[in-house]
Length: 130
Figure 1 (cartoon, rainbow, N blue to C red):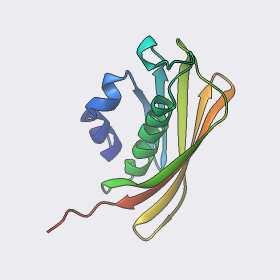
Figure 2 (figure 1 turned 135 degrees about the vertical axis):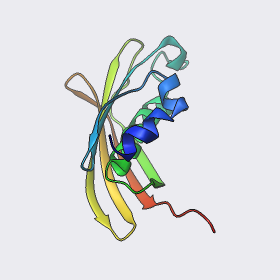
Figure 3 (figure 1 turned 180 degrees about the horizontal axis):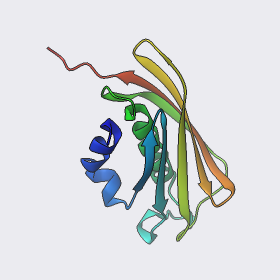
């Protein structure tokens, strides 16, 4: 087990939404989530916030797969296709680069073979205040 697995075990928000950690190691991670009726907006599609949360969780897992404790410094997402109730979404995160205490990670959210969203996150090693 690594820092990412420990972090996910304590992540009540992601686990409460049914997000599953499938893998996290060496700057990469995979997380899955089923779109539930509670996640669907007034247009009948998955609310973008839930898709972002899944991607952000995979990003956090990839960032923390090497240790030390790392947090998000910023992120953005491009929604490519809508997800719908019942869809099983898979987020694949991959480290692009690390420099000093920072890093850049890309996450692709899939439904089967289709790309649902592309996410880019920027990380920073967390230093507790003194």
